[in-house]
Amino acid sequence: MAVSTDVRTELLHIDGAAFAENFAKRPLGVRHTLADHPLLTLDALAELADRLPPASIERHRADLDLMTPGGAPELEGPPSQSVREIDTGNTWMVLWYIEQDPEYKALLDACLDEVETFVGDRHGGMQYRRGYIFISAPNATTPVHFDPEQNLLLQIRGRKEMNLGRFANAADHQAELDRYFDGGHRNLDRMPDLEKRFVMDPNDGVYVYPFAPHWVQNGPKASVSLSITFRTAASLKSERIQHVNARLRRLHLAPKPPGVSHWRDEVKAVAFTTARRLSGHRGDTEHGDVDD
Image (tube, rainbow, N blue to C red; front, side, top):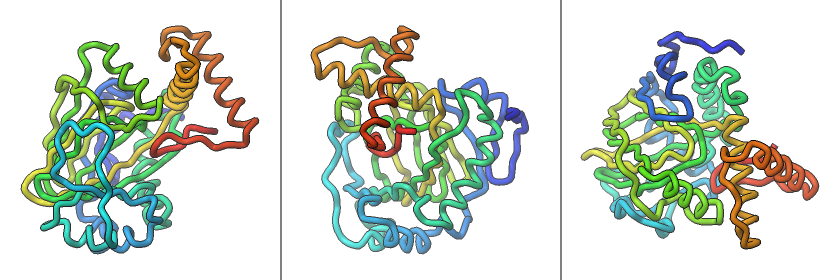
């Protein structure tokens, strides 16, 4: 597939040259036209929240510390109520896997079809499309964490300060990856240095590369953000290697991280895929598949 260098598309406005330069390495600001989309109003999201399975709803207090290792206790009650009371409540919530709903799957695919024109066959091409919606109270804090996906976070309602970090010592980042793949929470145990800050109003967005440390601070009004995500063949391979390394650590071995040894990486990736196929198990990370 050819890679586009156009700077403007129907739903998303992406600088193709900048996207190519930053892809999988650095964050990048983008623009979009979704702030007034009828599927992204609070009433529509409240109805979606009650349609989704309970396992696809995550809710906790909005006033968490920036460092909250291990996650936070879940809130209870009807999900739609949390959405409708987001302006006055103390709630942070996410609707996971919105593609389970046909209307939202169509919206997700429309957005990611446009992103795919910029990705092309880079890193093996786009795979595993997933969508999430973040709904959070005024002044809510999202603790420092990372996520495995390639992500475009699109601001729909309110103002959000998105902070992207990077560890000065690569060993610190690898230690957080090891902890995560050993079964730890996506919230980090240590604070990275600030790399770049994006202040996002409606129709602003940011591209976030896989496992980029980040933390979020809401403005004085409630916030809604749409997260459109995907993996690539290369990012999936890296995750599989990390999973194999976690198993090797349980055997008291000290495996090399991805990218250090090409032949070791190939052996681990094949071993992971073969083991999953033989067991008939479709594996996943905390919020996303890694199996074929």
